[in-house]
Image (cartoon, rainbow, N blue to C red; front, top):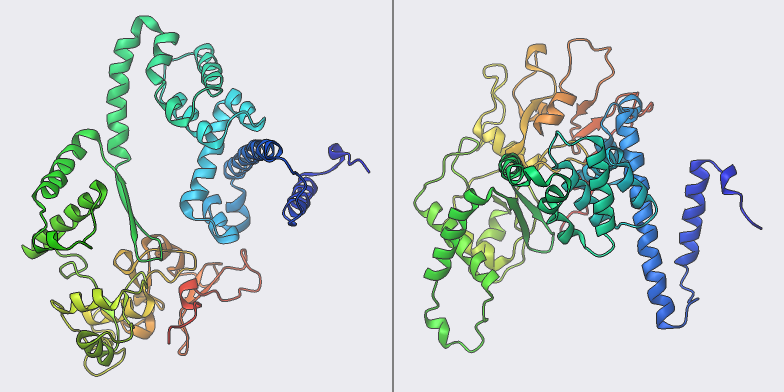
Length: 447
């Protein structure tokens, strides 16, 4: 039976694709030769590229029409994070790529046909966006056609390097002047896009990514190179089992040497009312046992919940401050009532141990990036006490902060006496207003 796809709506067509993918993944082997399988892989990559282009266009259409705002009171990116568990970065990239394709129809047509893989689409639209603002419509169309044509023989990295060539082809008389102007624009863009991010891989490592303008990065590179050159092995040179470090590993060690020297000389400013420190939570008995023998690991980092090896914990204990953090114990004042509006250091420490970050489901902001939010506002008679406080990031603080009109349909926070903080969605999001809790509180507890 042949399906008439023209008679199906979008939802039905997606259902057909879903069914086809289920059939492809049922474990049966339909192709026998290697060539057939290679051809299948190439066709599947093109199909994936077409679907990616369609998804980006759909996300951009939803963003442009503010559909997520109307239906759920959130941006398209926030809705994707909650609805399909995408990261904010991936969801944002999808929307941005869709918006770029709307601007460049020739590229969009090629992407929809599967002639470009997503990486090529990103490279081409970035190059086109960086063209001079005074290029007319004909020049932009010619640039699109050239870049799409180059995609037949150039990968994404090569396509990004074609910006100067485009200028020479499209406007040869002013290519040099425009190139100089482009370099200035690139500098401003690099300054705007500078960033440094840390991402836990949940396997014992933190991935560090960043971007700096070339001139700003050069002193950092020279500094790391100097520590790399200074580092030398001592007695471990005699150890036949000592690892032969790669250049990348030596640079990583140089970065840690730089950090250690900075900490040893107390050069860093205070953060959150205290000097920068790594905070580990564990019971006192386990701390003593871990410090004296192999022990059983019970330590984890505040904010990320990442467990750390006993050997690392023992190193930290060599130069550690011990702070009692038994919530509600007489050793710390956890309730200052109405006498003080701002959160005290002991209450702040207790909040970080208890909440471990922003309590809003799906938010990954760590304690140091959060505000201490009064569930019952100060202006409404709320007290500065642990039972009336939760950690929320600045963005979600604005969402859950109660207004003066109790009838307004808003997000709310509740703190049960026997459980983690609950976030109550407004009726426009969930008519039943089912309480939600952050995923970090639903993970199996370590024993």
